[in-house]
Image (cartoon, rainbow, N blue to C red):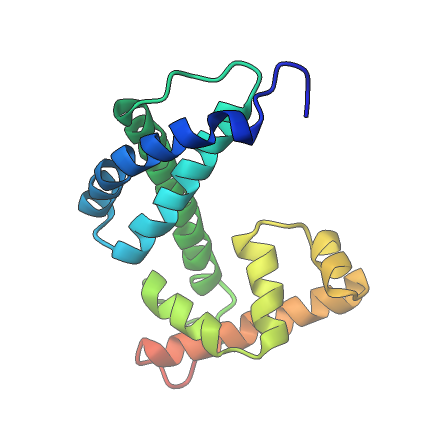
Length: 175
C-alpha cells in the first residue's frame, strides 16, 4: 500500500455504514434513470467500487449520499456513452456500402445485436473486437492468435455473414 493510503481495516466500519445508508438512494437514482433493475445493479456496483478506490486513495473525499449519487451519475453517463458508441458501430457495420445486392436499410441496434449473437463464434469474436471494442486488425489478430492476413479474411467473411443475416431480419431475403 502506498504512503498515505488508508487500509481497508481502518475504513471498513465507516464505509459499511455509508454503504447501508447510500445504497437505496444510489440504486433509486439509477433505476429511475435507466429503467432496468439489472443495469442499475451493475452501475451501483461500479459506483461503490469507485467509492472504495476513492476512500483507499491518498486523499480520500468526504463521502456522503450526495457524493455517491454524483459518482453514480458519472457511471450512468459513461454507460450511455459506451452504449451510444456501440450502437453507432453496429449501425456502421450493418449499413456498410458493400451489402450484397446493394440492399439499403436502416440499422436497428436491437436486430444488429441479435444477429451478432447468432453468428459463428469466430465471426462474433472478430466483429466484436474490431467494431465494438474498436481494436485495430493487428490487435484483433494478436488476440485471436491469427495472422493479420487471416484476420482480414475472417473479417470479410464475418461482415458478409453479418450483412446477409441482418438483411434477412429486415425483410430482404436476397441479402
